[in-house]
Length: 531
Image (cartoon, rainbow, N blue to C red; front, side, top):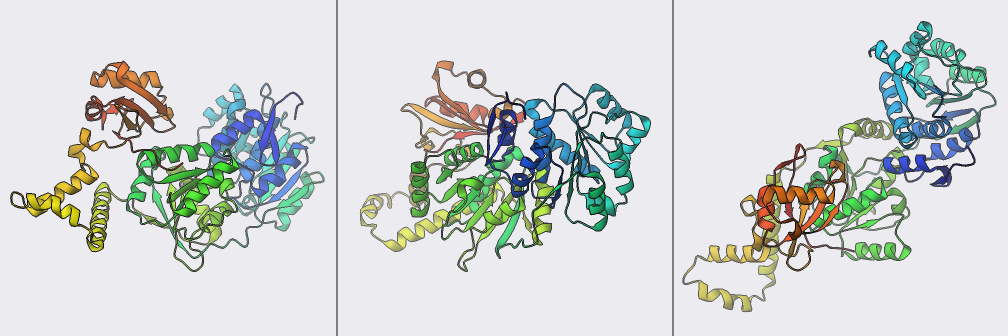
């Protein structure tokens, strides 16, 4: 590391500020065990043999040092050799994300892709090459790739390359790099041939290992639901509307993710509070009192914040973000189903999460059942059932004399069923799409007096800014811009206050309209709950 760079904490490790920002963006709060062991050794320039399976965070274990050491003004400096094209693509994507703020250029090289395109990219200049043995050799033989400036070589999943008959090719590739290089070998198992390879090409290597032999999963019901990343909040809200919770812990990868999720769920009227490392001890204690005391049913937390929590009667654990390490998954879901009680673990899975989901299944030798997300009709039916159950309790509890006195004068003129239905509507507000935007149904939206606070399903991810949101609302509905009040924009949604006389108009015009190429929802926010 160079002396003039600024460093920040990554758990107990120090990383450059730009790398630290990228790790935060990726949701890494602290290093996994393999990262904690490997990164300091690699930063010291030592050769390393790492025994670890996929699913332990090993890509970042070598990806972080690669990015830290790259000179962005030079050519190819790091080479990662992988057994398959799928792994090459995955490793290239992860190193690219780690090096995003340092503008690190990575290039995956594998068979089945146009070699001419790869040659063009190599000529334009890259810092890190990740490839399969056959295609790497092809480039070397064509003299379209120069490895003379490489100072770090990573052999990833060496036992897989041995099984696939690539060891001779790997040796030819290593010989094309300078002798004064740093070499890292990762392998889930250590057969004799892999150890022999290490002895020939690594200098006084340090040996590190992360065992995955004793991964046991609690005997609880495990399910997953498919969703798209941009629809994840809506999918979770729909699930929470139909699932019977006692207490639930929802895990997010990042502190910002916790804050975004809490805001989004509170906007839907759900009793939720957040817990993460940026909170003071007083705030943490207050949140835990609310959760244990039942004032909030849902706790959204990061892995680090939830460590060491001992909470009884947690009926559900929900992985809003799939964890980067299989052990994190086991620790998370182990917080439900305690003391012989039943529990459920729910994982939301977007298309890019499938590889990690399969790794969790394979390493834990567990099958996670796929379920279908509830439809809007399912949610409506569940809400009806909830209302019926509440009414049963009220009727059985009695003490209705005062209210009977109000109803009696109406019985001569109206059907008793209509009277009961009107009382429900008055109590709970209008329900159904035909009443979207009806002023009488707004209730307390958490806005200033004379204003209505609206929930809009677009945010920073859509490159929307407050001034632009005001312009869209004004252009589409005709509301004068000065009648739009406070605006809070989050990653995937926003809150905006509008004058109560215009609220119905704004909802009716914008709800399910297309803005910036996608359909949005606009609905009254719920009063802020929790703390």
